[in-house]
Image 1 (tube, one colour):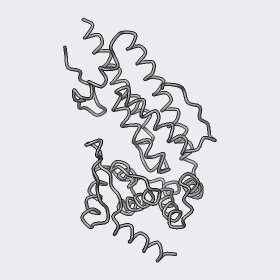
Image 2 (cartoon, chains in turn cyan, purple):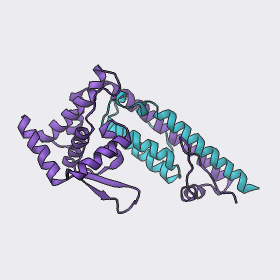
Image 3 (cartoon, one colour):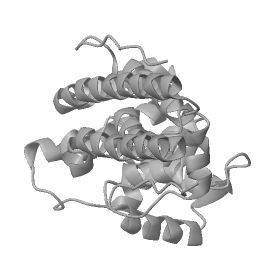
Length: 85
Length: 185
């Protein structure tokens, strides 16, 4: 879990979708369900080989995941501080 | 102890069940730091994968899509290839006409996607079918309901996850897709 991936232009979309599924399972296992749900949507786009211009959401997906992540991490930090008091 | 409120994208908050699963991962400061490190790595991996996928999807041609499908699914059937080709043709129009919302026949896109998945023996979630329609989810759900009313598709609840519902082409829907395919050959 958590290792960096090695991808380039020769990596097939099928392989990318498989690796994204693995990331999704890891995120779910870590309790990052919102980020996981965003990723789930991204995987469907990749699996269906939908051209990115068909969906504005896929163009902004990385931003969405970043924001979601930030929200969740901030909350967990807040929780950890709160419970240490 | 204060109840955690985890902000969702666009407002709202996770319920306590969601946050319970997160609690399990944070039991000490060390565990918390490790969790954050892993989360960052996992996110970075996902973003890199998505970036690569987007670059590849931007340049993909219809023929590549059909070849990928036949290679990955191992499905040489001409019906399967026609389904994939038809769907790819519709998807790729946006390359030549990059104007959002000028094309749209969500029912046909949903039927094609469900048929592609049926010949590949893959199960399809409602979300997946909505994405295939290339229209907003609420619009797609309306069309899914209409297709169901006409007996072309059927819903099946996921026995392991009550939040998830699968849909598939009904026997009638599949037979009609095949008939149409034969008529255009």
